Image 1 (cartoon, rainbow, N blue to C red):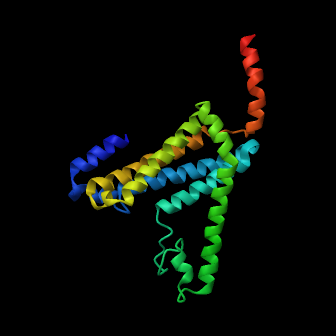
Image 2: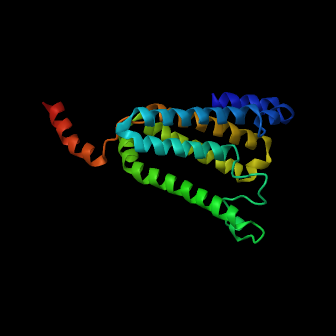
Image 3: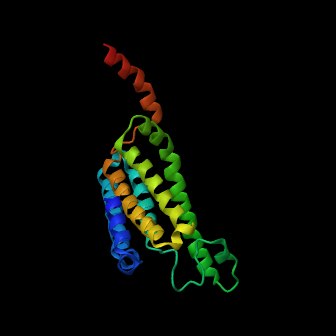
Length: 207
């Protein structure tokens, strides 16, 4: 699907294609809608699945942050600088309350992401080895999103084909994030527990 979208955009040319990949264009709006659905789905699962509520809740928060980032909420029009940059907090003309408010928000975002990564690093590696769908989709999401950011931050961004690739890759990444939510474990199983169960499973198969 992503390849078909990229082919259609590049074939249409900048005159037509630029409107689709603009900030309010069809591709970006589609990306935002998918991420909102993924966020709400993760939040719903966090409520309905108490056995893995913390991880699902952190996933929902992370997806909400991800959706906000894709919609450029870090570039608020009433601020003279992006609040995610150190420069923002060093500017004397920025009111103290803004520095404190947005600084606390950024710290909260970092804490949420760090907590999720620390909690899920072991299970992710374990489930990648077991080829669990959620982990495979997660790896594909990271790869696709990284490719889009490379396109955004290099000379490719100065070309229509490069910008088209970036927006289509972000759209595909949003779809992969939704698939991660769909396949995400409903029950948290510690890595140590699966390690202990592995010899038992092997013995059962041998028998």
